[in-house]
Length: 421
Image (cartoon, rainbow, N blue to C red; front, side, top):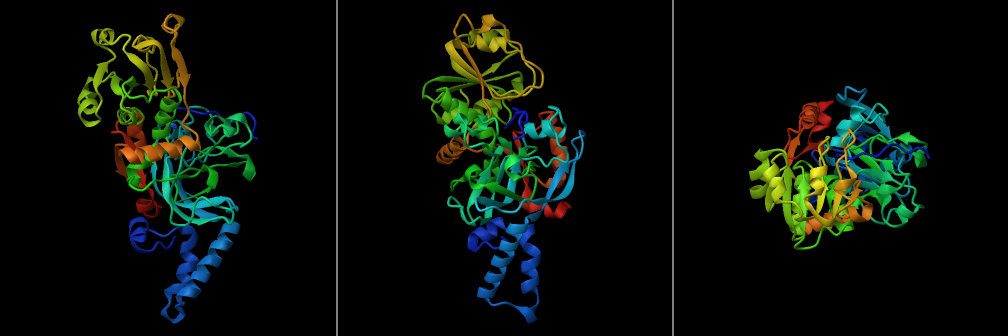
């Protein structure tokens, strides 16, 4: 989710890819297929014919799907938030499940809050990660949307009740039974605690998996599974996607920089509002914003009063919000997508006289997430990322806490996880 939060429910309810695909996606083999298949083909005296090798692989896959598979991740064991290697087991693959070899996973502020138990919800050990891109290695017999070799993504949640009004309308992200990808409780599978994408393999019901369109670079697309849909969804819901409208974006971080890109792709006039004058050049020249306001400069703020149709506030720490409402036109819409841990202060006079609206947004439903990826592919929208190996993750988390990243860390899971254990 990006710097927002969701409290736990009060009711707990390839190894082989041919051709170019193999060269691109297979730096290491999936842990759950490696040992058995290698034993079968390693010795020249026991070499199998191609049809026999396929049969062996199929049998191994079926056995491990029934029994569950070993997984390797990095987990926090306590509120220090320090991650270290963690061996665990994924549940057995069901008929409607997709097994995914994880290639990349972004790091979100929510991961940081969770592993440090800042919301009081951590169930240790916690394997974080919900900006997941990977390749399908196997599917259950009832899966119709995906096949082995498909490039897919998994975002902030991996389940919902499917029967409430929110689920029926495509807003599974607001279902009271939403199952978080990491540190969630999964009532359909014995109340197990979910473990996220800082791991080599994911097992997810096909209805909570999205297809990654061709043309999106996978490493830079990973943060879109959270940061991207978190800004795209409210822009669509509140009409902040109309060409010519004026959008304000508060904060130029993991969420804010993506919001600027979507706003410009929609044809909007975009103003970045920041406390940091040093981000002006980045906002205007690199990201394409039209204007830049320093929120601590009274003259700049006064000059912009009443000019914006809506504002996305992406900031994840406490900040004064009353002056921001003055920037909007009458009946303008403010949407909070960040999750400060301290309460924000809003006097009634900031919204009543101008009939201004205030709303929050928590990621987006599966429908919105898929539409967002399609839009991003069409318009060339990706996140600005800093690629890291898994053994750098604790340093990256320390830097993230200081906002020392431009603008999203992404872990090369497939290229580094196995070598760090």
